[in-house]
Amino acid sequence: MTPAAFTDEELERYARHIVLPEIGGAGQQRLKRARVLVIGAGGLGAPVLEYLAAAGVGTLGIVDDDTVSLSNLQRQVIHATDTIGTAKTESAKAAIARINPNVTVELHDFRLTADNAAALIARYDIVVDGSDNFETRYVVADACAAEKRPLVHAAVGRFDGSVTVLMPFATGADGKPNPGYRDLFPEAPPEGLVPSCAVAGVVGALTGVVGTLQAMEAIKLITGIGEPLVGRLLLYDALSARFDTIRYKRS
Image (cartoon, rainbow, N blue to C red; front, side):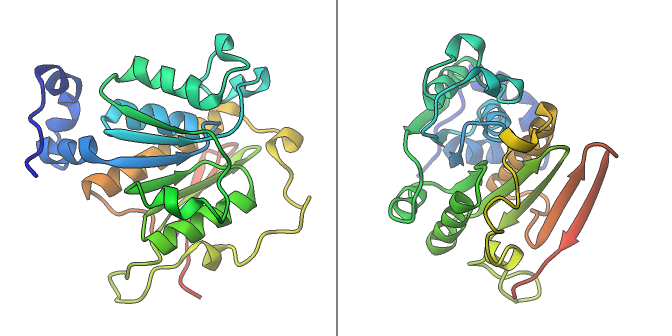
């Protein structure tokens, strides 16, 4: 299928991408055709949605069953004071329309479970997980592995965060299968061991750093540039302004 030519408005909007040899017109067309599912419109999902919308990703799906509250606004920058009490999906959709009206937004106002995750994920090319609990993370990771969809995973807490890309259905340059989420975290920690952000706190700007890294990984996957974080866990310590990388393999 021949991709639709860019309009003059799109050529100007994406000019800084198109002049990059690594992306160019072909890469921008891939972004335009891409369908990305974002799990959560919260601290991580907010910058992911904003930057993918600005980048020209053609279709963004948003999964979230929560409403905007005042305590969200310290970090969930896609929402605003006048959206308190409204569904996060609707608030995010309105913000995306202001950023880039060319983006189609699909709303999924429910919580992902083992029963509904695979069918939804199969409708998208890439999944970006911004969830804040291990139950959802395992559900998403298992469904992405089963449906052979790349997953950009991240987590944050207090002053630190981590990002990785999961493609356990594919093999690496060494011919060996890539690791999956359960190779990194074989099982969830005991309940209460890892406190939630509501209990432990989190710096708002931290979610912006880590969510933006997720958006960058998604753009790399869509356009086929660079080296995605497959088999590598990128760690960010905000207090020391330090990045470290840990390699991990299929168990």
